[in-house]
Length: 56
Image 1 (tube, rainbow, N blue to C red):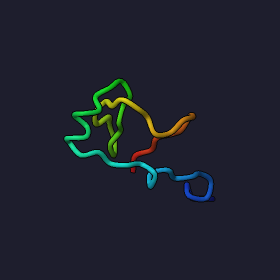
Image 2 (cartoon, rainbow, N blue to C red):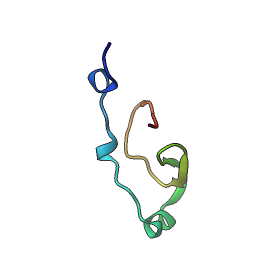
Image 3 (spheres, rainbow, N blue to C red):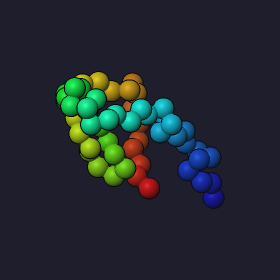
Image 4 (cartoon, rainbow, N blue to C red):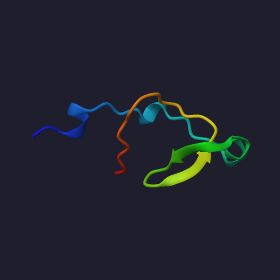
């Protein structure tokens, strides 16, 4: 049996956390996910493509 890291790529390190001030300035239509739910909605997304979001 293989672990998730052996069959998938982790892009979490490319995600840039936003401060509450930045978040307020970037209100939009795209969901910004936290560890297990939508945290807020912002004006742009950082990944282009189809990805699976997993919470641990």
